Length: 169
Image (cartoon, rainbow, N blue to C red):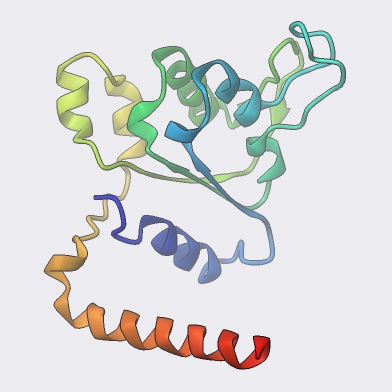
């Protein structure tokens, strides 16, 4: 569900890994317009489309050596799902308008608040991509199921806001 701490979990995995000194890039797939997300993730070459006045390094290339967290993966368009599957199989990206494959060593963490198994059955999500992504499945319970965390969160935010109030006064 939204607000369960998916990004916090991805950050914790990254911080406790050997990739901690490399980039962690987080992307909400639902927040990027469908016509821009391929260029944002994979980059593009100069002249690849109208308005592409210079080469753009995508987020997957920028995360090289580190971790890329793709939130709301279930919202990806089918064409982009195919590109993501190709990346997972080849460990190479290709910028939009580019011809040269670029090796990329990225740990991919994905999250969604949708039922991907149902999306596969309904033909909205690629089955082969689902199985590639579903190597390790973690379910993060909603906060209402983690009542002990409420006090911890309240204490954290109280301390944070108290410190901010002291420094701004």
